[in-house]
Amino acid sequence: MPVVLPEPDGIREDHGGSTPLWRCPHCKELKTIEEFGWRYRRDIYPDENVWHKQSWCTECRAHG
Image (cartoon, rainbow, N blue to C red; front, side, top):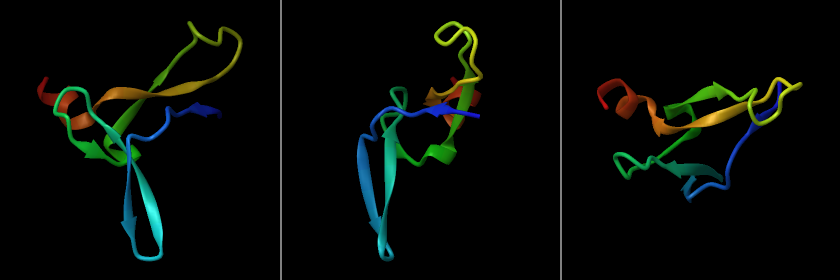
């Protein structure tokens, strides 16, 4: 199933590699993709199964 990711807002260097990070617009923290949810976007791609990254992180959405 295809997913659409925006360009990362930052990179964290770790053991022999790097991890892309995205900024949550609510808490302003840089977080990994696992800390965001996914949203099915039929309105953008009507006949395709495409998922987009949620804008707020899961922690902010739970308490927002």
